[in-house]
Image (cartoon, rainbow, N blue to C red; front, side):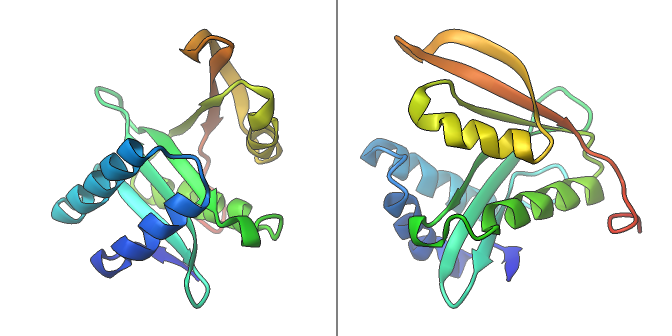
Length: 162
């Protein structure tokens, strides 16, 4: 079941973030601070978290608005526990993010990822879900590690119209 994150999810989400092995210890600390801060704010133009809860948290997505834009959001990360990947959970979670953004007046969703070979599967995931590579910044993260920006226009469908 995909649902908004609650303060009670904090420890489980940190365990999930650690299990996917994408974050350094410093980044995990920053992630925890972002999560806690999000519980203090609310509203349509505030960052938000969603989780895939299947008798335990197996997925998470974090999205925040782009400053000084109208309806542009950035998916900072989406992750599924390694033991639950390749089951369609990432696609379901991404679709829920998109629907949530539409309900908040979102127009565009950006996603930034790494251009290295070990992230090829991640880039294919976004392409498969209708995202277009919009920009590439060479050597952004490190030597040989480009920043790749994907773009998608969010559209209302029968399931998202209210």
